[in-house]
Image 1 (cartoon, helix red, strand yellow):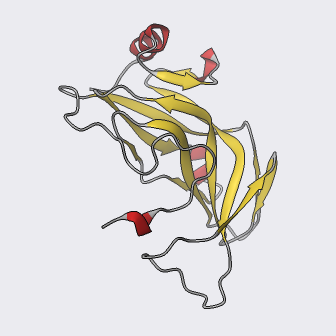
Image 2: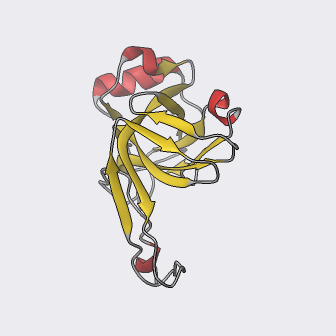
Length: 175
């Protein structure tokens, strides 16, 4: 069941759902707007020119209020908002249609597990032929919350729990 604005507000008021910082106008009829943070990460060039899945990947972190995303460029970014989901609510990350129409693809695997807490790392890709200027604080997407039929038996406690900033891949930790 998708949560309504009334339910979202009630959960935030009770402290069951945490979204910080948040302004009331971010709450939409069935979602909460998320804003772009000021931390960006790009994969460092390697002498081999290859990214492998079994070793840590080197990232360059950039803190900036504006970031120029060049055509065909990929960058990790973060949300301004830190969220904490209870064990019986999951969230979907959706990009804004207005940005998609500019050629900005926004993804984060699209799913936030119940029990997750942290800032959400977004994967941004510019499919346009022109550069796109990203600005911290601008609405970048929305979170759609869904109530599960019961609390998760094993809520999220993975390698990205508590993340802050644009967090790079930790796939090398997979077994």
